[in-house]
Length: 292
Ligand code: ZN
Image: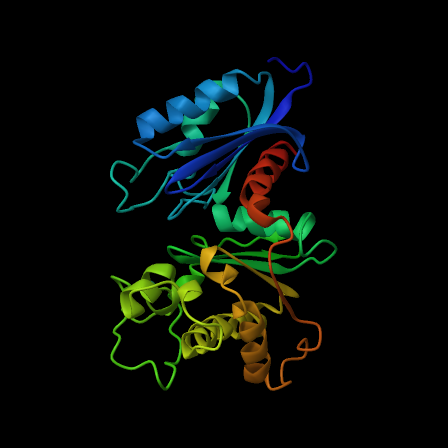
């Protein structure tokens, strides 16, 4: 199929799959496709082959798993950083697609992409400052302040804050290879599995396990509200779908605030407005932003 109007291309690069899409705009997707994440050579070639069916492209956006080099001043901009995923360390994702298609390429983390999409089209439509947090195989967060994704020397790593321990969560050291009991080490899907041998959804709704995990996630929400004054935190990822967890996070986060934060009456913790599409819509936005 060949489209006459040049299209935006988007890649949501994940650890297990790549989601590909082309569209006239982030909310007008023409075609989408998924491929499994294998070696960089195989995966990028397969992705490029799919995009060649949808030429001409006017720009490509990549929202990727991290760590990713997002600092424009860094010579390695557009590359994957050091990762345990075999073969992917130092992969020049943005350069590969810029060379293949000769179009502008936007590049950011998957969670910053999702934060952009949720702020412009999803749960945060109409607000200028929003955080997107995913809780699944890891915990990651993206941040949009005044309409722009936040970068500094790198990208935010919200999963690695150091929360207070829940009084009854004793004897579990946490699973983060770097920090042990950081937030990701305590509340990610693998941490839940390592501690209890099952997922949160396997527990009855009134089990204390919900309280323990919500206690940790609420501390991240409190930290985000306190540090950034974001209006909305969107909580996505597999763990947050466990029934009743979001309500508990809201309840504990409000209790932590104690009405102190100036924006506490306006804060919201929401589920994604774009369901599973936050990441791929964000990738298409990165493509659009690469042109303008
Ligand atoms: Zn950590």
